[in-house]
Amino acid sequence: MELYELLHILFFPGIALHESAHAIACLFLGVPIKKIKFLGKDGGYVVHGDSTAYNIIIITLFPFVFNIAISLVCARVYLLTGLSFLKLLMAWGAFSALLFCVPSNKDAKNAFEAIKRAYTKKQDILSILLLIVLSPLAIAVALLFLAFVVLDKFLVLRLFLVIAWVFLFMV
Image 1 (cartoon, rainbow, N blue to C red):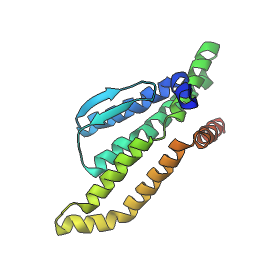
Image 2: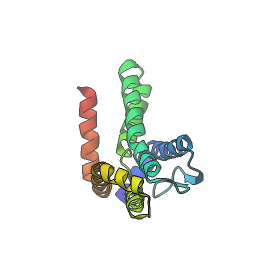
Image 3: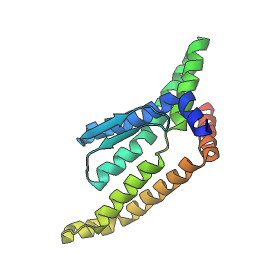
C-alpha cells in the first residue's frame, strides 16, 4: 500500500469535506453536478457541468476555504471540551481537513483550462477590455494554482503546510 493510499484511508474525513465543498460551491453557483464520489482508494471527485471561468475558479478554491473553516471549528471545539474522546475526534477532524484542503492537481488543471478558455474565446470589445483589466488577477490565480499543483505532488510540503497552520491555531 502506498503512502497516499494510507493517508486517504486514515484521514478520509478531509477528502469527504473537500468533495462536499466542491458540491456546495456547485449548488450555490447553480452549476449542475453530474457525478460525485466522496471516498475511494484514490480520493474522490465531483464532476460538474460546464460553467464560466469565474465559477470554475470558485468551485476549485472553495475546498481550500471550507476545509480551513472546518478545521478552525474543530480546533475551537477541541479547546472548549474536556472530553478526551471528543478532543481526539476534533484533532483528527482538523488535521484531516487541513491535509486535504489543498486543491488537487486535477482541480488546478480545471482552473487553468477555465482561465485559458476565458482568454482565448472570441468576445466583444468590452469583454476584451475587462479581461485586460483583470489579467493581473488571472495571473495571480494561475500562480496560486501552480503552487497548489506543487503542494499536491509533494507530501512533505503538504505536511509542512498543516504543521504551519496548527502552529498558527495554537498562537
